[in-house]
Length: 503
Image (cartoon, rainbow, N blue to C red; front, side, top):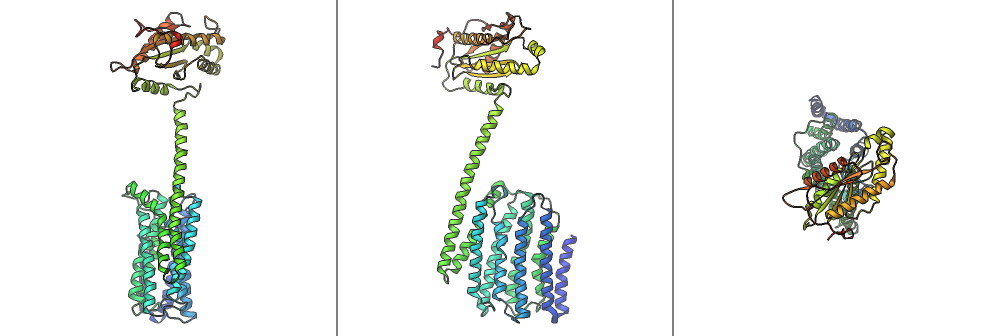
């Protein structure tokens, strides 16, 4: 509130000075104009310092716009005091009043931080440079260095300024509304405050003051209107950012952010069309550059999106691999086992039995107690390597179930083949002859429980897990280092050993 009161006091003081000191009106107006611009530039530097780490460099582009406007005002003062020219539209100052929007236009047309690329900056700089040339050509095609030749030319300049200010005000307002980051919201709040205010005050001043019988500064108290945009920016930049009570839908944010690069290209296209009657080659070049620039930008964005999508997909696969891999043995983990078992159980057209082998390292606690947990980890890694090298089929799935337990899913396997596979695994580990003095066998051995089931609506994977676990318990109760079969008769007759294959 104090900032707003101070801004209102500046405007009131300007209007009062013009009223009580009409003979010094021009000097008073220039003093207030330069002071307001300086105040706005100081507030921009202050906002830049508050923008966090790293600091938002876009504030310096806004500072550059204000500096260009100040140069235009200085040239206007030179026309009045040095050249004694009272023309309301001298060419040099008009050019800078048009050119000053260029740095801010680049920021309004910029992509969000995450999407800013060096090639996009290069395209924007090329279009901005071309737009500066178009500004120059368009300005001096209407007025000379001394100013407009008549009211018609002055109106043309006024309409060009109106078009520029209104377009930039709309673009800034859209960017302000469609922000999802605090620093973007803070920056575009200041830009919007300045250009929306400038669009209204500039239109009123140009058409109803400067071109309506008051061609010089200081001849009307309405001069104080031109203080408003700078004071609005000052108030916006130095006050604390208010809490947002409304957030636009995400699709609105993404649409505006995606469309923002077209603001600069459309400006080049618009001014290119304006200069075609007098400079057809330059106008056509500008129109082509605008179309090519936005097309090239869109194509490069697509390339970046494809690369980013590929990178994210690869990263997702890597993370997914980490989620389903046991970090100690490098085998699949319990989560991967459960998912694979569910997938096999519900595989379309599944009619063959699924075998599940539950494997437990015998008396592993004694091994850990004697040699330590690090040696125990080495032992588990050796067992995992041994199990992998014991003749599993490509379709068989080996995983670490947890602790010293492992499991094998063998789809399309009947009971006889499953028991034969289990015996192969058991004997292979036995032949590795890993020393285990605490075991009655003197070496590390494993016990295996075997169970099979045909997928049906009457049962589920959990039934198969429970059956294999019970079979493992029977193997350990019978003396360990052996294979435990399921209770009761098998689901089907055993195939010959060489027939263990998918059908």
